[in-house]
Length: 260
Image (tube, rainbow, N blue to C red):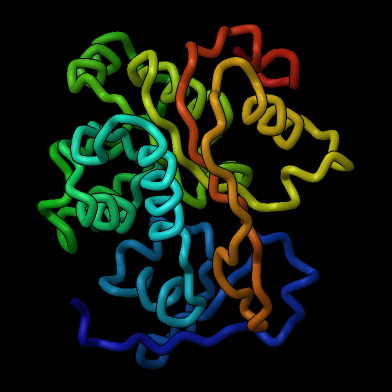
C-alpha cells in the first residue's frame, strides 16, 4: 500500500525503564529528528504508512489477526455465522482491524475512535472498510449519537490493543458493551500482566471480574505474542472472545473506583 519508507530510530535507553505507553521513537525527516511516543496516535496517523511501518513491519504486531481468529473460533462453537456479524470496532484507528474482519465476510462494520486523525487516516488509506465511522468520546456520548449508533443493530464488539493504557477508559468500553445486542459477541485483547492477580489496582481487577462474570460467557482465551518491544523482546497479551449475557449495570464500575 505504501512504497515510501520512513526513517525510524529507536532510543538507546532500555525499554524496561519505560511503561509500554511511555515508549517512544524518533522519526527522521530531512534535517529534523522528531520524538514521538508510541501512544501519540494522532501524530503517527498524520504520516502515511508510518503506523504500519512502525508496529507491523518493525515490531511485528499480530493482534488484529489474532483477535479476529479468536472471534472466529468462538463463533464456530455456535450455530451462527461470521458473515452475520454487525461489528462495532471501538478504538478503530486507521482500519487495520476492520480489514482483518472483512476477510471473514462480516455483514457490517461501524468504526469509532476519539481521535479525528484516525478517521482521516482511514479515509486516506482504507476508505471502504467501514459502513460508518464516528469520531466520538464514548464517555460523553449524547443521546442522539447513541441512538444513531444503536440504529445499526450491532451484535459484536471488538477492540484491539487499546485497553489498559488510558486509550479507552473502562467507562467507554462498558458503554460500548451495552450498546450491542443482548446476545452479541465480544472480542478484545489485553496485556497479560493486567490479568495477574497480584495486581489489585482498579483496571486489572475490573477486567478479571468482567471476563469471568455473569455478563460475559467466555468462549476462547489464548496467550500470544502481541508484538516485539523496541529491544526485540516479545510482549505477551491475551486474546479473548465470548458472548454477552446481559448489560453491565452502572454500579459495576464503582466497585473498582471508576465513575459509573
